[in-house]
Image (cartoon, rainbow, N blue to C red; front, side, top):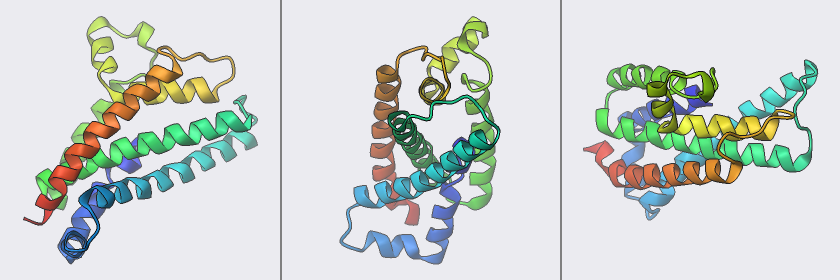
Length: 187
């Protein structure tokens, strides 16, 4: 989800180059709804990826929680995570404005975000300096929530409520920044 959502901004740069962003900005739609629409489009892609993961888990007989409430919560967290990283991507696209720079910066940011989270290693075995970095990384809270919701007999490190609270706060901050920067994409 991280890797597909973080490169969502490249589509926005293409839309700018084709004149679509300018047409959207002169429409009566608010900037907030335009940016939220981009996040919802990325959410759909994330939900499709989650469905594929569930299908693979079913075929491989992986022990995950198959209860409907847990699956719906996973889909909600996936949508929130996709929204976070797609708005982050939109912010980057608004700042750099060229495909080449965007691809370079996207690569530079994606790998540290991934490796400085709890996606591969649990926080408990990280060196103290990396644990501090991981607690500042929203991907850590996303991974924690998804593990707690999907994996049998797995508990979250921070608690599902705290994880979701952090993710919602990060999304709202990034959304506000993206709404402010989106019109500057055409300048």
